[in-house]
Length: 110
Image (tube, rainbow, N blue to C red; front, side, top):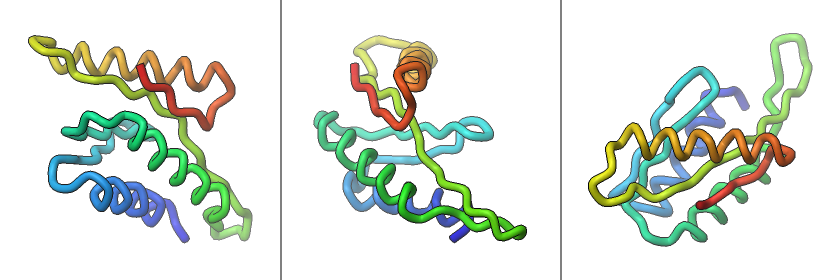
């Protein structure tokens, strides 16, 4: 399995669970943004935790034969009424860093 297949797994699981109002965007080199028109944060946390477990069991093999495991930390928040989208992203980003500081492989919903 290669890196692009991991991204496809993430996109597929999100799109299958939350159709039709969702999108997965590559935000930076190692960061992704998931936008979902959904009220159930607990369901999204469960899906992301399941994907984390999948990644742990399916490492990527490099051309040198080395296995690299992937995981992710996430910060989830709701877009508030009359809020600028950049403010929502900034709040989610700060939650990602909080999750990483607490030991990574965590999803924080606030």
